[in-house]
Length: 109
Image (cartoon, rainbow, N blue to C red; front, side):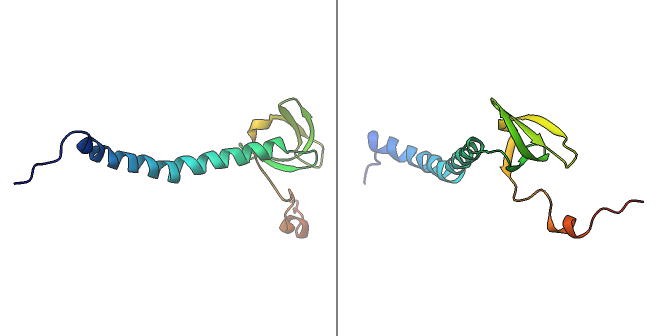
C-alpha cells in the first residue's frame, strides 16, 4: 500500500492553488489598473494651453493657464473661467463643439 506524501512536498501542493489565484488577480485586475493610472498621469503632465479637457465632474473646457497644480479652464464663449485641480482632469476631448451643434444653432422661444 503506497504512503501519502508528507512534509514539504505536501505543503507546496497546498499553496499552489493560492499562488495561481494571486497570479490571475495580478494579470487580470491589478496590472491593467496600474497601467491605466500611469497613462492618466502622463496625460495630466503633458497638458498644454489650448487643450480641450473634461473634468471628473463632467465639466468641459479649454485650458487657459496654469497655477501650480491648478488649471484655469474657459467653459464657454462668454469667457467664464473655472479654477480646478490638475488631478480633477479626467481626459482630453477632440473638440468642445460637435458637428451637430455647428449645423443647428439653438432656437430661442
